[in-house]
Image (tube, rainbow, N blue to C red; front, side):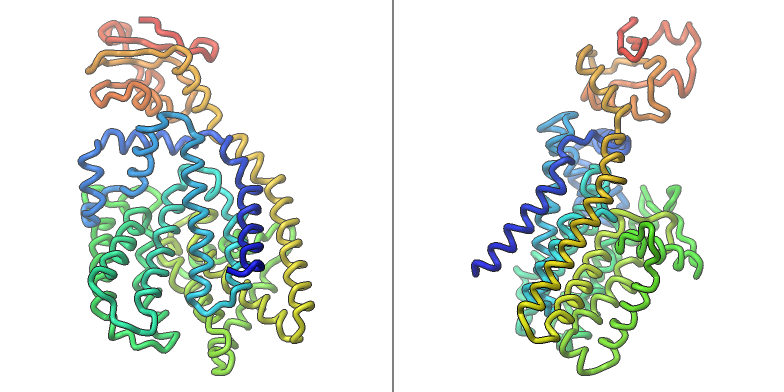
Length: 454
């Protein structure tokens, strides 16, 4: 590693820590309590079995492995969860660089793409909201599987079975993290074609990945916990939905705030078309054409027809667009043929990006970080202060809980760490005084303080 490469790697690491360090002080999101209670109720054996049976439709078991491992070690302390997510994201930054190199990008372009993914305010909830751990894990294993496949296919050699098993396990982990991973076989097949490779040497491996993909899709459609049957997951196949999604993706990835971005989008489309159509530029800058196909036509497909998918959900397409922009900027900066010009362009671009994300972080992200999970964190604090304990099989009622959904019940379930304890929210389904008298324990929130009244 040259001193320049090491210096830039250190700069990216410092950038990552500077912009992400504050997330260690953020609370849990309300969905975290729901997710953790779901996996806790499922139990370790069911969760373990779900990891290797994608056709069952069990809800994102890799996320369950993340939650339950940390819950066993750290309980309801959010800091270790955030630290673990940041470590996975740091791996994603390095994999973005390897992904760019696999597509033929230069060292500088790969480094800039990694810098973009080290912190992107348009994907801000990816970095501070633990409920999006599914997107974090999917991004990591998706890129890892892609890079692994590219390494296996180096010099167009035929993969060995032991090597192929590593790729398939990474792909399975991506599928079991989130549905975005289903596009990987298509992305790899287009990569083989676009770079003029003899893909038939790896056809058997691609076929196994496609079978794994089909099993996962079947689970999401027909499994016991079929995701497509849940609210918010029913696709609407229409041109308007596609246009709405594309506008949202442009707004988030290109940070559309206070200024129109469609002219920029149109210009990038022209650059991509030139790289696709013109043989000269396709050979010189193949990453431009591939990243455009990947980011616009392949990666978004699982969410393109769903409503309201933005932010962290765009992580995988954002990697492709980051590589696209990094290659376009560095190659255009090299056209004058002078290193000083290239260096000056890169410094200006990085400075403008830093200024933009600092502004958006201060204006939008930091207030959202402060607001996240305040009610739930207060409830957790009250349970810690009271420190109640109950025998197995107890039936309890929570009176006047401060949440507006089931968050307090989830927190209580996790606090008692007992699947046999039955939690009832009086606010949800009021009990009569006689029914309340028959319960084993009553807890009330009096002036915001948790007290045991029975």
